[in-house]
Length: 355
Ligand code: TXA
Ligand code: MG
Image 1 (cartoon, rainbow, N blue to C red):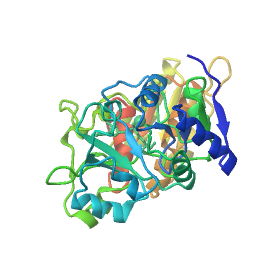
Image 2 (image 1 turned 30 degrees about the vertical axis):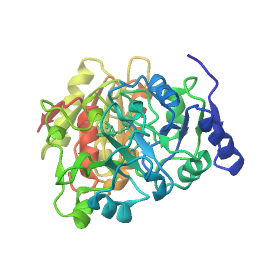
Image 3 (image 1 turned 60 degrees about the vertical axis):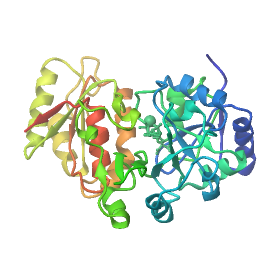
């Protein structure tokens, strides 16, 4: 499959052309505050099936439906639980997806046959304008090939999907950098199925105690959010998380061992440690003269929001450099740290080394 992928800006004429494509049943990627999404008319099963084809996405993984106004919710859901209402008032538009009981207006291709649908209102002007101009809710997963890190720029989208989708709206880099929090509000106790931009602490301020799907930390249990079971966010090289008080020393040892085997290595770190790694490894070279140890900082350890913003871009950069092994530091799981560590563990295929 190869079609010409149009690149649009965010002016009204460009958005109108992109909206026209969406109304015609085509797929168009667009920026949101979290990551870029690959949109199609959520009420058109044929259009939605093109999302799965372009991404190579398993059909048992349901899609999030994006709306621009609260009233657009009504045709999609049978009722709105009180907890959902509280969340909508406080966090919409924003990086929170609510799992709600759905009507039969929502095609089974969107829900993967579940009786619920995930819905969110993105906090991004361009996304909201595009949805409103299209005049239909947009089903949109992250706009990456299945299994790859989510895209935070239009270039990332094109890297994965050029020739496979009708268009991409380039709205510059996404702000939050990790995907929305997926919150199930259909049971008695609200439950986080995927940690994301709205933190557990923020939700608990509004809702009281909020659970976390036990499957998130345990590969043996089937998750309630089908998408979280797949290998995800993974770089092409093999990634390891190195935790514990002597992580830097341990990483230095592991990098030396990998270099003795002639490997090209990546180090994923923070501003606090970058200098030390540079001092130790910046003179390492491959036989062809290229740098052999690529050290990337996600920002300051004290600023987890910035760390989240840079995470997927850094993982993609390691691929561009062709590193074979990546050693990554770990982060506190407070606030957005929970989402960062969830994505890092998955990117590392749960390979964790203690120090
Ligand atoms: O920030 C985001 O959420 C981005 C932007 C584009 O909005 N979208 C996104 O979509 O991350 P995707 O498809 O990559 O992830 C959707 C997640 C998957 O883990 C999926 O299984 C879960 O939401 N999900 C969707 N509908 C669900 C449902 N009815 N029940 C449980 N989980 C659901
Ligand atoms: Mg995704």
